[in-house]
Amino acid sequence: MQCMPLEVRHMRHVIALAEHGSFARAATALGLSQSALSRSIQSVEREIGSSLFVRTASGVDPTDGGHVFIARVRQIAQLTDDLDRDLVNERGLQSGHLHVGGGPFPAQSMLADALARFVADYPRIVVRMMMRDWDELLRRLRAREIEFFVAEFSTFGSENDLDIEPLASHPTFIIARREHPLAGRGPLGLADGFAYPYASLTRIPPRSLEPIRLAQRRSPDATAAYRVFPALEFNALDAVRKIVLGSDALMVAPLASVADELEGGRLVVLGSEPHLATRYGIVQLKGQPLTAAGVRFREYVLEAERAFTEQELVLLERWRPRPTSRAPAGTWSHASTRARRRPGPRA
Image (cartoon, rainbow, N blue to C red; front, top):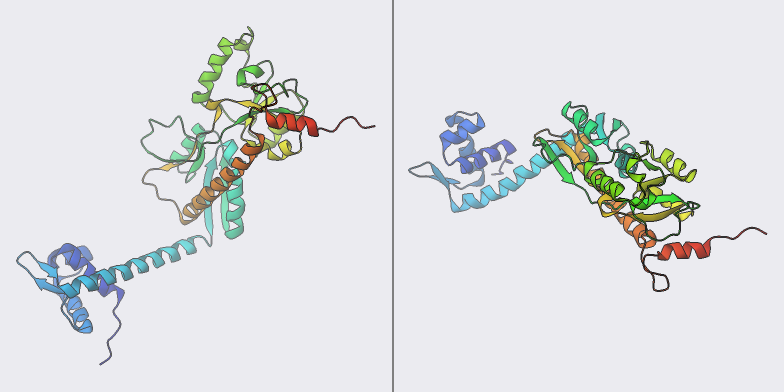
């Protein structure tokens, strides 16, 4: 006699009875009557030709063969659940909307890279990327206008309703045009540039602003403490680069944000400060599940972050200032190399 294939629902009945140890409790959990559950278990035992459970004083226990069978059907049920979830998610990615946010730096770097791949793979998803500072993004998140955002999170320590996944910290550097008066003077700190306007792509978080203010007060330049820092806030990266290229303004940015200009010799690295490193994270509300599009885009964000970090390691090896044996301490090997490569006046 040929056995009929078992249905997944019967497998789930066996699993529930094993988990609850009693027909009464398992039937309640499944929303069945005890008699219906008993008939289901008996039909499975007939199909496989052996008993799965033995009755005890407290309920039922699996037989030796039952333990083996239950382990197998658990795997099948899990695979079925995974397949159902994947099918639901894939259907959810055929259309719909994705609303996310990003601070100015991540929105114009690795988030843009993640979006390029995402919209190529899921062209029917309508995407809205909101670029704001961290406090505004938090307000939009709590208003359910975005699913998650990537931005500075150092001010969120007391916020208990957030899930935050920190991303890699990226060092940022003081950047100037090649002809800037400070170019070529060796490693400089932020305070060394107070005589010139700083252009910022985003608001300066308190963790960075406090040591900057302290450096202003301690500066030997008596007027430094009274200068506004930053002198210019502009959340468009292209615009900030143009301002720095066309003036003596300084900017602070990760090297990846100005890689082309460094390679072309139009911008140079002056120095850095430890407190200027980024502290970005993926921020979402606790207990608020992401849509299928949100889950998938988050994966793209993490991939783009890894690629950004790998690119940064290459750039740091080339452009990060380091002392050389031929130059006084504090001078940079890449600056000396760039000076040797710089073309002279045309004949």
